[in-house]
Amino acid sequence: MQRKELAKKHKAGDASRLRVGIVASRFNEDITDPMLEGARAVLREWKVKPKNIFVARVYGSFEVPLAGAQLIKKKRLDALIAIGCIVKGETRHDEYLAGATMQGLMRVQLDAQVPVGLAVLTTNTLAQARARSRGASNHGAQAARAALEAALAVR
Image 1 (cartoon, rainbow, N blue to C red):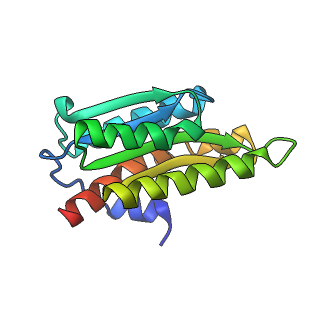
Image 2: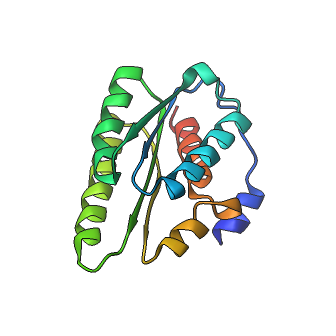
């Protein structure tokens, strides 16, 4: 099933009792800011109380796992949404960065036993990243839905 079809079939649940964190990188913020807003919109749609939403901004995607782990611990979160953007460059740096970030986020999720919605884009171009950060393809919104569904399922 395609992501767009899945999003259309999706209905907002009642996440009013959940505490949710969002860690968003500032690097490529023309990409990450719309994803952050998409995640916030989904949290509102799912009735997460504003006082139960905690946002941390970090420099880049590499810093997201540590900030997420600390946010989970300090705020006793039920779910975390990780937002970042890694674009391929002239070297393989993006591959190392993406691999380390993804492994870090998986470790955070398993160690803390808290679902992590993944909105760390890994694209070949900024144009691809823009397309995935806006509208129906907004990965921030998709990651928020994934994190909330998982949090409600494991409660």
